[in-house]
Every structure is written in C-alpha cells, then in structure tokens.
Length: 288
Image (tube, rainbow, N blue to C red; front, side, top):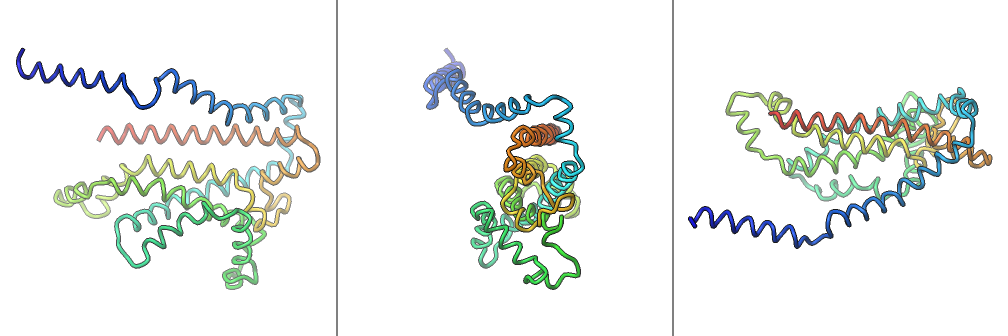
C-alpha cells in the first residue's frame, strides 16, 4: 500500500472514530430533545393563544381586531418599531465599527454601556427616559416640540432598547473581518467608499439583517419602557401590547388573544421575510 493511500485510510478511520464518539448525543436523540424543549417553551403557549381565539366567530374576530383604536395601535407599534430598528441598524453599525477598529480612552466603559439596555429593568428605563425627554427634563426643555407623551417618545424608547442587538450581532463579524481585504482593494485602486460598499458592506449584510430583525422583534414586544414615556392616549400614543393588557384587565380574554394572534402572525411574516433576505444576502456573498 502506497503512502498516500495509507494516509487517506488513516484520515478516514480517524473521521469515523470522531463521528462515532461525538461528545453530544446522536442526531435522533438531540433532535428529540430540541423539539420537545421548543414545543414546551414556544409552541404550547402560542397554541393556547390560538385556541382561545378560536372561541370567537370570524365576525367577532374581525370586529375585535379592526376597530379604529386597534388599527391606530397597529400603525404606531409596527411603524415605530420599524423606524427604530432602521435607525439602530445605521448607528449600530457605526458603533460596532468604532468599538472594533479604534482604540480610545474608556473604550471598555463604552463597550459596557452598550449592554446597559439589556440589564436595565424596563420600568427604570421608562422613568429615566421620561425624566430626560419631558418638557421640563434635561433634554426636553431645550426642544421646540414635545417628545414625552407623544409617538416620538415611543420611538425614542424603542431606539434605546434595540441598539445592543445590532451592535452585538455585528461586533464579532467585524472582529473576524480580515483587513487584508481592504488592503487588497486599496492596491487595486479602490477608494475608501468603494472599499466599504463593494467589499466590506456585502460581508456585513447578513449580520446587519440579523441585528435589524432582532431589534425589530424586541421593539414589537416592548411594554415597560414605553408606557411611561408614551402617555398611552388612545388613537395617539397607545401601543398594541398596552391595548392587550387593557383587554385583560377588562376580562376580555378572547379579545386580548385575538390581538395577540394578529401581532404574532404579522411579526412572524415580517421576520420570515427578513430571514429570506438574509439567506439571499448570504448566497449573493458566496457568489463573490
């Protein structure tokens, strides 16, 4: 037997040995545990919401989910969440770039501050934002328009809680991005803007879409920090999660679950669309 054949045989035996003696359990067992855990944590609670909604007739469901007050809350919740995630995608990219590519005093402190919305209780965040942006607050007193108790206040709160999702998603990707790519583009005559748009940004697009999706999903379900700064005025600054809580307090459980089902279906459709865009970006990236 020649040396190359012996080497191939040894590598094949080693690969088989590693496959048979995996640290984790086999695929069937691991898949079973994963599906069981997913069902108990996610699918069972969500199915309960659907089952409670099925107690309504179709006419009752449409009436409960399409009143002018409910439609106004949809527009505010989804619109503010989208705009907040969009702004966080832009400035989250800039923040992650600065944290990865530059050295400056108190960098560790700034890096830790990014995670503050993660750890801060939402009620504390809402009170702090209200005190800051109120008409007599530190920042609100200098503005010619109101922020607190308006839809703008809702958007400000959603921007605050969504930024870490974009930064922490992009940061590891930027750390693994080889600077040799930028140097190669520069040697080929590319400007800095061309290097960013043609080389760097396509590589960051999947992670950026993931961060956008996470920030958007987090904003859709936010409640604690928003209710303090929003003012919660029907048809003006009332978000859908607050309307769901209001229906629960009125013992209208079927109406509350009907709104929850609408939020769930629309959110899932939007996140599925973002995941499809992410998969397209990865395929396009692989084609370079």
